[in-house]
Image (cartoon, rainbow, N blue to C red; front, side, top):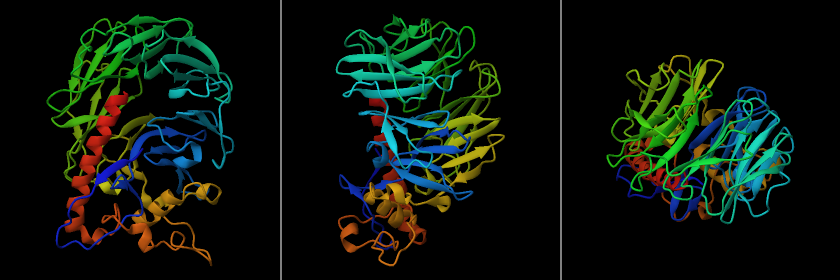
Length: 443
C-alpha cells in the first residue's frame, strides 16, 4: 500500500520528531506509483496512498485517499474519457462524479474477482479491457461504456496465472497477457481475434529462469510488434530485453547501471523512439540516482544516459504527452523536487506537482480517511482549512496520542537535516527495497 520507513536511531543533533500514522511499527512516506491524465488532459498521479488530482483552484492539486475507492491503491489505473478506473480486489471502482467525491463498482464483474489490470482500448475510448482472477481461473472482460459495465470475453485454462495485459491498436485487436502461465516461470498468451481465443508461449525461451524475475513492460504497435521485457539480475541491476516474434526469440537490449532498477518505459514521436528511466535502489541524495536512456531504433541501440541532478527525478514512471516528457519522482523524502516533473529535452525538468501545491482531501471524502488526512497534515503541512471547532487535524497539529510510539516525521522539519536526513534517506531506501520486492512478487 505505502512505502514503509523503518525506524532507526536518530543522530544526537536531531530534535525528536513525530509522525501522524504508524503501520506495523513504521512511519509512512508519500511516494508515486504511476501517472495518467484525466479526461481534460491534466496530470493524475497515482500515489501509494491514493491520488493527486487537479483541484478546482487553478494551479493546485488535491489529495484523494485510497479509502475513497476500496482502501488500497493499485500501482496502475486507467482513464477512459471522463472516467477513472481503479482495479481492486473488489472489482473496478469508477468515479460517479467529476469532483471524485463518489465512486461506484462497475457492473458485470464477479463479486469475488481480483482485477489485476484495466486497459483502455488504444483506438476506442469507450472500450475498456480487464484481466480478472477468480480462484484458480483468469478471465478477460470487456466494457463498451467506459467501464460502467463489463461482459466476459474469454476464460483461460484453470490454474494458468496471468498478471499483465497489453492491447494493440490493430483491427482485429491483438492482445497479450503475461505471467507464470501454467508451466512457468514466465509465459505469454496471445490473441489475434479481439480476445476470443489465445495461443500460449509457455515458457518464453531465455526468460524462463526461476532465479530471475521477468515482466512484460510494453508492446509496440508496429508490424510485427516489438515486445519489451524487464529482467532483474544477481548483480542488482535490471535489464531490458526485446522480442520481434511474439516471444519466440528474445535478446538483451540494455543493461541498466549497477544498482539501478527500471523506472518507466515511454514511446516518443514514433514507436522507434523509446525512453527508459531508471533509479538507484539506494538513494544517495546526489546526481546520478536517476538515469534516462533514449533509443531511436526501437531499442536496438541506446545513447549515453542523461543522469538526473540532485533534485531528480529519480524515476518511478515515464509518460509522453504531446511531445512533453513526464516523470514521477519520490518528492521530499527521496530528495526529488516534486512528485511529477516535465521536460522537453530530458535534461532540464520543471516540477509540476509538489506538496506546496497540494490541498487536503476535499470535505466530501475527508470523513472516509481521517488517518490519511492527519498524516498529510502533520508530516507535510497539507492541512484542511481551520474551523472554529477544529480539532488537531484541522489546526495542523498532532495530539500527543496521535504521535505516540513513533519518533520520525517524514518530509517535514527540514531544519534538523543533519540527523533527520540521514535517518529518513537510509530508512526510505529500505522502504524502496521492500516495495521493489513486493512488485517483483506480483509482476
